[in-house]
Length: 185
Image 1 (cartoon, rainbow, N blue to C red):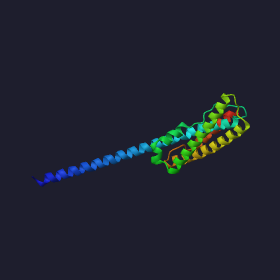
Image 2: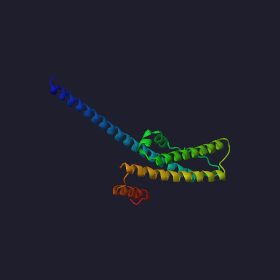
Image 3: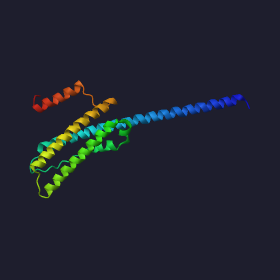
Image 4: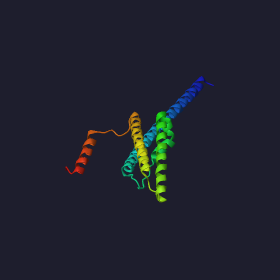
């Protein structure tokens, strides 16, 4: 047998091996990029979900009174989805995971208290002055937690160069809307 056959076979094997390694590397890079995009989408959804919860909490805080009944739900499903996602563990810092978990527990505890007050109202009991103070304190604490977590999410999205960037055009649009609401034309 000729040595050129062995050389050609060796070159073909090395070329195939290098090609497979490059293909696996490119595939892993693509998967990692997709995973980061999904993580950022989940964080963004969580941020907006917390914004909705913040509005609900503000409304509860303003409307709670002796004898009233709250029918608004205090929940953040997007936060629970982010916590259940392996992307948070893969891409997020440990502190973010801890804070998300703590906020989720605070939301659940607040929802339990709200449910207890609703059940008491259904049984003929009314929310007392102590219940009003407790509700306002819990909601105020939850609002502070939500604001802090939204700030953390903004920082995390900025780290990945994603998120909402306020431009001068946005300011003009919002100022125009405010003028329209005031009737300034």
